[in-house]
Amino acid sequence: MNKSYVLTIDQGTTSTRSILFNNKGEIVGKNQMEFTQICPKNGWVEHNPEEIYELTVQTIKNVINSSDIDVSDIKAIGITNQRETSVLWDKKTGKPIYNAIVWQSRQSQKICEDLIDEGHSDLVKQKTGLIINPYFSASKIKWIFDNVPNAKEKSLNNEILFGTIDTYLLWRLTNKEVHATDYSNASRTLLFNINTLKWDDELCELFDVPNSILPKVLPSSHIYGYATALSNIDERFKNIPIASLIGDQQAALFGQCCFDLGDCKSTYGTGCFILMNTKDSIIHSKKGLLTTVAWGINGKVEYALEGSVFVSGSAIQWLRDNLEFFENSNDCEDSVKDKDPSNGVYFVPAFVGLGTPYWDNDARGAIFGLTRASTKDNITAAAIEASPYQAKAVMDAMIEEAHHDILYLGVDGGASVNNYMMQFQADLLNAKLIRPVCLETTALGACYLAGLATGVFSSVEQIKKLHQVDKVFVRNISDEELDKRINGWNNAINATLCYKIKNN
Image (cartoon, rainbow, N blue to C red; front, side, top):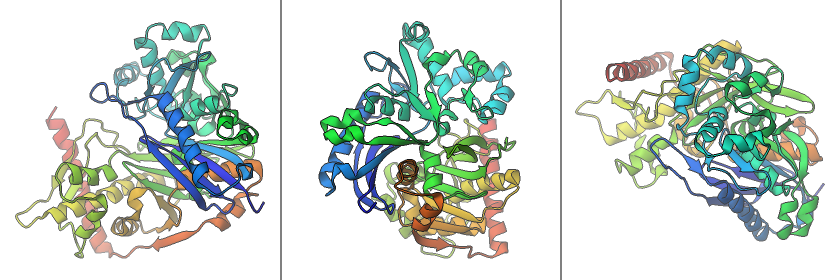
């Protein structure tokens, strides 16, 4: 196929992108549009699903108009999405009955706290690999049932449907024909049993969610249906299959070609998400890691361990916007001129608590090690170093629980262009850190999966050969210096947790 393209929809938390890839995995067109962040109360984050769909269609139109291709050469559409964000909509009108409740939103925290107090944590973790937390979808659905008039009654009358954003977009793009999701997104709902690979009746009862509103669960690489709703852009879209659905972090794992046991990827964005491929092993963590489905492909499901760092790039944004340390985020790397640029300063950016392996929602940010000699450059360097320190804590837990060293770490996300941060991460881990040429690995993963389902790509072996490396980082620090830095960071973390306890 000399002229074969895959159109990928990368539906994120703040923007939607449509990216056109050729059959070498190279970007030939891209368009991005931001959408409204709705915050009705402190800690609540919502989106308008219809706005997301409309902008998705618009970005597709824009990328087609700006790319010199024939629509008939598009062989597949792939969708990757912000995970856990939950939508309930009327199955006849297509109208959402409430805004999409975003993964970040804490409005269902009381529901989760009650279930934890009632002693359901072990059951939920054994079946889902997750913890009871408002981060995931189930409590969001229950919150809508509890707070939107007639929502529960409509669900019992088979009048509404549930979906994460991938499901909602699929349903709209197929003109209401296909109500489905993939294994990776289903595994983030707290309703899906990762052992049986089915929606779990006991979990549905626990969260008071009727099974009838849930989508069909299918492989991540699969022809789900056809993009008939895009026929108004070009009639030939009705023949283009939607051939992949996958959650954004799992898509990045696939896009980084992390196909082997122990392969890891770390995405450095607003937060930091680390996944390790554990192949067919379901590892139930005792160290705060989550167990998730990586993807379903060729009749087989593979799993991953996952850890989340809540604040990564947003710490740099805070220095830029709140403290006005620099004008542009990219300028932060100018602060790391010296051999030890942080000069003994440690910055724990626990603005919204600490993620894996701590899972402490009440911890708050702190800066340690300040002296009269400390400068804003030292604080900036400490903020840059905070992401690698936090990621190391996650990966140390993965190594211990998977009983497998990390030899390969693929990196992506906006902050991965920071060479100092990437070198510091390689120093901490003593692993080969690979930054690819294409940093759009989330969209690329969905592209690969859609291409596998439609013959654009023949195998994962072919995909590996297409993977282009921009730069390799390896350890360049002494054991003595490494121990000194790690001890300092651990002291800072412990002090942050102690302050949180004393402050309650």
